[in-house]
Image 1: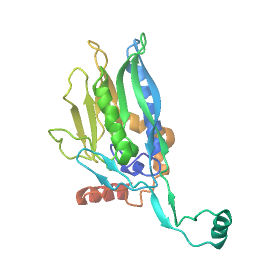
Image 2: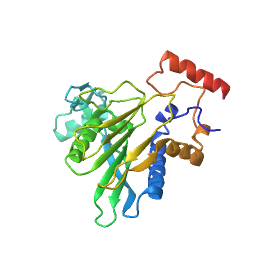
Image 3: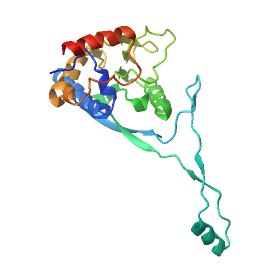
Image 4: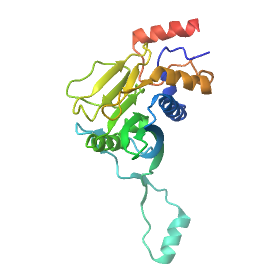
Length: 263
């Protein structure tokens, strides 16, 4: 039985997100390889986003600078053996011990469209992850976007996460659960935006190529459906519980309850 949602399934934002993210990147690549002209190729590129899960986000300014505590400080119990060891050596025993920051690399797959002749990077397709939308990872991702905006590379960003920071624009797009953003290097600083509701099917969006070549169509709903057909996520998700935060609106919660009851 497929997902009870017509579009994106918010239950995937839990422990299965990393697995789904990589499966979706593979499906997008496979779909593009069938429609791209022979002069182009779609490749998977992996990078690691550094996270610091042992510390909490303390503050996020309007400039999106993230502030973390330098260390975690804890009082040490007075252990006789440790004290005697320092006393025997003539060194002063410490009164506190601190736990330093732990850097954890989260793998993130990106789909890259390149031209075959020169391997030129034509279009980057980013599937946003929680690591891109909170804490240090959000700052890192913002820096990556700024670098791409200075090149002749199109950027297609797929945000299928309800939680976390959103991309900001001078003219704010209408509120929605999900967004697709397309920044063509031929059209900057303008960005095309697709707001998508929880009850909506995902759209077919363009993957731009080099001028004057026509855009390649990317059927996002077909890609997500293919992930469910391949893995069977509906067997692994607990639809008897509430979806991961943020909480649904009252109207969406009632709509979901009806769909689950019918299912």
